[in-house]
Every structure is written in C-alpha cells, then in structure tokens.
Length: 233
Image (tube, rainbow, N blue to C red; front, side):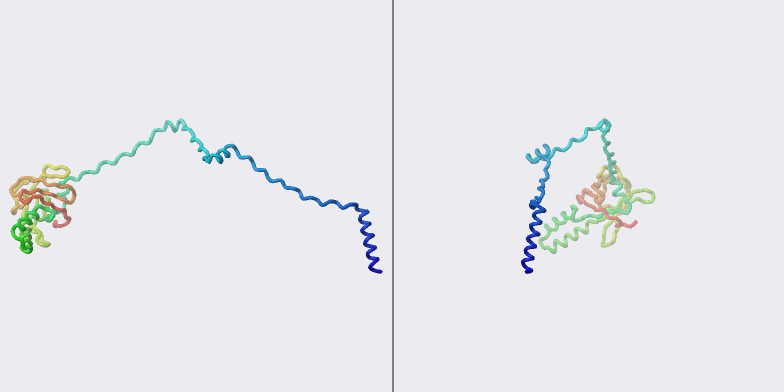
C-alpha cells in the first residue's frame, strides 16, 4: 500500500512540473576565444629577415664650424740631448784607477809565442809564461790631481794585494774628442816609466766609462778596466 502511493504521487509531481515549466532549455554553449592578432612586420624588419643583412649604422653628425676651425694640438717638446762625458772627466775622476786586462792585451800573446818556441814541455812553457808576465809591470794606471791642481800619471805594479809605485810623471790633458784624449808629458818622471818610454805625448782611447786602451810602441795594444777605490787617496 505504501509502495503504490509513493509511485502515484511521484508521477503526479512530474506531470505538474512539466505542465508548469514547459520544455527544458538547451544547455548554454561556451564562448569561443579569438586568437590575438600579430602585428605585421615593418618593411625594414622584413628586409633584414629576408636578406640576412644587418641594419645600417646611423651617419655621424657633421662637424660644427667651431670644431672645423679648431687647430691641431702642438707636438710635445723634445727632450734635450744627453750631455757627453769627455774622456778627461772619465780618467781624471777622483778615486778611479785602471787595471790591466792582461789576458785580453797583446803581451800575453807575444809571451805565449816565445815560450811555445822555446820548449814543447807543458811545465816548461808554463814557467816561461809566468816569467813573461812578471816582466810586465804596468799593472795599474792612475791620473790623479794634487792639492795644487797639477795632474800626475802614476803607474803601479801589483804584487798580491799590494801596489808598488813604479813611476810618477807630471802631465797635462791635451786635445780630446768624445772617445780619445792626448796626454802631454810636462816633466821628468820619478822612476823609470815603463810605457811610452822617452815619449812626450801619447793618445788614450776611452770608449766608455770603464775601459782605456793604449797602443804602446813596445807592448802593443793594452786594455785597462776601471776600478773604484783600488788606490787610496
């Protein structure tokens, strides 16, 4: 009984709803979205993309009247040339002496030839060369000035650490160039002068601050190297 009443009631309600509302409305359709429009490329962009070339650089602005009339900057002023140090200043500097470079000078070769001709024995040749070295005594040269302003040419012989005065000659500096100087003998020597014996003038070659070269009539070419403080004041 309860079951039939429930169904009849449900049918009456369904018919009443259909009579009042009419046919059901169709479902609403979703709005369609329009894709965003892409702006058309400019002609310049199309040309670059099609040809692969780069865009032209802008032209530099033209010079103004003030810039065109502006004078060029002046070149820098060159530095003055370095002063040349004369040979008289080099060899006459205080506390400077010149020591013989015996292996590089002519006497060593003359002694070698003489000793080689004398004997073929190595020990005999060595002894002969040692005696030949002892005969050369102009080991150190000094061109010093005394308190009275006179210039002296002093020659020393070296024995170990001792310097023995061989000769002392009063001189003057004569004509000179950038690399040479004339030595003029003005008086007799104390002691026997071993270089330029009996000569009144001689020429020294001074190529730099550290070397003096002499062409002696007896010994040939002699090379001396500058030494500071070798001879005491």
